[in-house]
Image 1 (cartoon, rainbow, N blue to C red):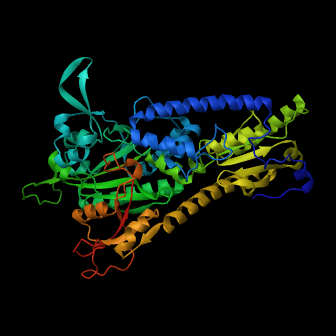
Image 2: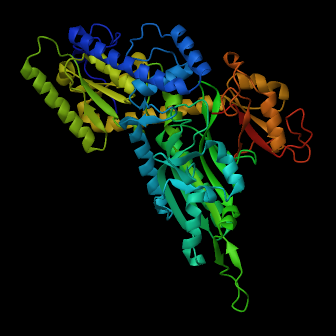
Image 3: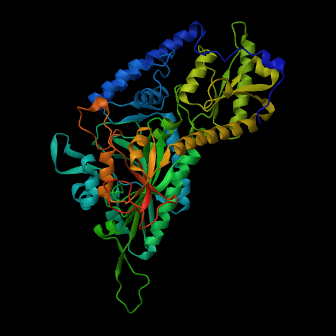
Length: 590
């Protein structure tokens, strides 16, 4: 529990509420120049990599960023406001926050240690859950032959435009081109047919942590739409539809908890419409998120029941265990599932929580949860006093790491406390502890929460309560981040029964629950009716999946409101004559 200390100790502290970019001293100015130079190099690299994004988008981004600089922002920090130029802000938060770097192949990105730590945390949590379900990890090759890939017609049509092909070995053309997997159904299932010989081999539950390649698109966005991305893909086989259906929902619930319990991101679980389900699947369930800054929905993770489609294609059968001895053993096609969660999770988290000072990381996935910064050191501080202060700080770090807090100290020379504050805010460290001679004398630390702006973020923690107060504050940060995001999502989830409200509410950054007939033709009509073309792109062919397009169905939420009277309530689309089947959530989407 945080506590207030005696006034005399607090009064000895220097005023650290002023702009920490000011009065840094000559050494810090030199450090800032070095950092600014590094930031400029990173920006140049990003600009070069972005040449593959498209001329219009690049022009739009640069023109906006030149006009929408944040007043007083240092070059090493975020100099574009989230609310003014979201794409440039997002790029800066990721690169200046040390999450990601651009690669020289357009649409491919380098995950730096802090972002990969988020992914590792998700991996560890999810591995623990699925292993308790009997899922085992494995690894299949990333190459797939053209013949195998094309065995499932509907499936490959869903990915055809995105498949990358290997056509040469050196300068020699291959006799038959080889695909790089966009997903692994057709890679794995020939071997399921080989391995599954009896109902006793079921369920077969395998998972891969790998990367896949999906090549064809115009507007790459880090973590959201990339040509190569990391994910997990689970592939399971079951004797019955009921067994498969139970697992589909169990996995989807794990995905929901990844977002809510690790990333502090609210999601809506539901089922995809026939139009939006996985190509070649039976049905698809999903968790759908929401990006408040853009008003877009975003698919967070999907769990598919594939039915018997692939087992029939790849001849994955077992004998009926319930057949009587005197009856012929009729082969049964197994029921299959596939489910996947990708590094898109990281992009969703960054977009929702981060602000104009940089990253805001939920504590449970932050590589550094708490940083201790020495303060109050002046030119009059002796070497012995400095060494003693650093020794005390090392002791505080040891106390926190002993209880499982990922804590470290920032004892870098040549940087002022204010510069360090900015740096750790930019990188999204959830909790900063300041410790100087005044704190040492008073027996406390000054704590500053990353998720709370200004003086309101500050409190004092007595040293004897440090190991209980810090975990409590970190939990509060997670809960408050989730609460804020959940309130925003709920406030922008509108339930309507009047078509005239649809597009105006959509343009106000809402997602919409509407009574819908669930037919593909109707979905296409709604998308066309609600399309809004960005003015800057009038002379550019539309990308069918670009965010500026019309609304599409996000999901049929499992939690259905009342209000649809079956056989009476009509579909909201004014051009549709069918009756409504369910409340369906529509929105512009990434």
